[in-house]
Amino acid sequence: MALGAGYWTLRPTGGAANDSPYRLAAIDRGQITAAVRASGTLTPVTTVLVGSQLSGQIVEILADYNSQVSAGQVVARLNSDQIKTRRDAAQADLAQAKADVVVKRAQLDRARSTRLRANSTVKDLEAQRDRTAAQLADAKRNFERQNELFTRGAGAQQGLDAARTQVDVLTATLASNEAQIAAARAELNGLDADVLLAEGQIQSGEALVAQRDAKLKDILIDLSRTDIRSPVDGVVVQRQVDLGQTVAASLSTPTLFQIAQDLRVINIYANVDEADVGRLKPGQPVSFSVNAYPGRSFEGSVELVRLGAQTIQNVVTYTGVIRVENRDMALLPGMTANLQVVTEDRRDVLRVPNAALRFRPAGTAVGPAPVALPNAPRAAGGNRGGGALRERIELEVQPTPEQKTALAAIFEERRGGGGRAAMAGLSEEERRAAFRAARGEMIAKIAAVLDPERRGRFEAMMQEGRQGQAGQPGRVYVLDAAGQPRPVAVTIGPTDGAFTELVGGDLKEGAQLVIGGGPRPVAAAPAGPPARGPRLF
Image (cartoon, rainbow, N blue to C red; front, side, top):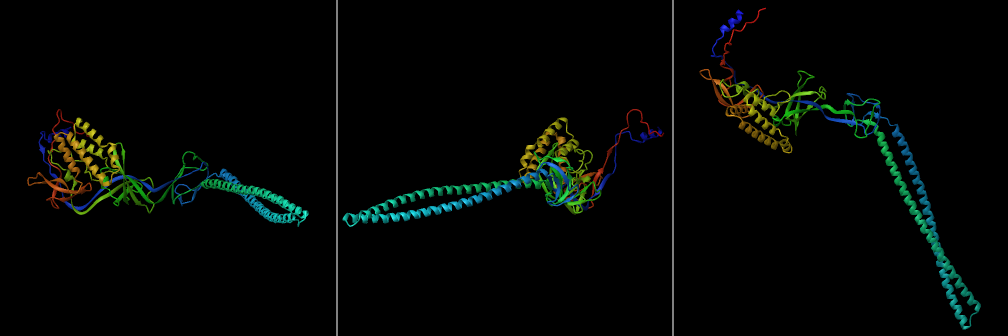
């Protein structure tokens, strides 16, 4: 009790200020490494889902987790008994069709031979007809001579009659020959039709052979598909079937294995905040760590930044692809990487502590110092874009409830998906310009809803937020001859979160800057009875 009373006795009871010295830090030379920090997941460059195009029972599994496989290697087998039975039946049908074609070819050869004989018969009959026609012409001439002799009385009746009979016989023979020729030609036409029919049957048989051969090939393809093969060289990262399990491929292809191709090169898909995405460029070095190896740093490089944005709970991020050499196979798919992308690396430059840029003397019309500069390294995963700006405004500007409502409407309008969808088809430069224009419009709307005092806080906050950009104006304080802080305008460049490059101004290396301290109000004595001191027992 006595100690407590003594404490309050020594404390001043008035509201006078108790001057305390300012804390100072010097401008020095050193390294400034500006970086974007994010988190992402290690993912194989190529992951192949190995499935089955057939339904059936798994009768053999030849690969397991972490198995190294090569392209074409059998990793599992389906039951093939039913398909083999279909194959044997198809082979028999094909053999029968080929035999039928052989028979039809023999029939065609026989029909052609018969037609050839019939054609020879027609020609022989035509020759006989021609001979008979010649004999008939000779008989007619002989009849005319006998008739002339008989008319002059120089010939006998018997000779005339014999000549007439010869003419009649040969005329009948010629008619018979013509009839035989017509019959032979009709038979030849029939044989021609038989040949055409045999040729058509052969074509039909050959088509049937081709059809059954295609059916056999289809069955053989199904038979080959009972051997599930790896399409790539890689390692099995997932096995989703067990021995004896039945897979059904009626609606979709079931996945049996996941095979990662060549884990010696692996990607990180990092979620990059929209405020940082403009600072990423292909080829920038990346360092990262994983929880599996505390204290170990891995290296990679930025491969690309995907143009498609992702919006989750009003937070807009872009996917950055980081390529990593994994020669010792220490990195495994699925690990979470906390990465840092170096955007600027300045060596042997003048630098000022960020605390000096944040310092404001007591009584100046600004809000509390910002938590961090916008380009300072953030926690893994980046800040929350517009959400972070809104939180800073509420913390530093301290808007009224009515102003908070108006600000919420501005941020909701800013986060509308239509603008981002429109920017998806733009080039990188056009997208950045559109982003800057939209952000400038949003800042103007925010300033318009604030009263003058809070607008000044907001403008001071935004000025500090731009200090991480090269060639931006800044403000620090030095002590004058009276020991009071005096503002000095400077031009600053990139920041690493602790220090910012000094690129312009009148300050030189070694100059002392105010980073804190100053007069503080003294706590007044409490009203009422004095407080008790600490209990000693």
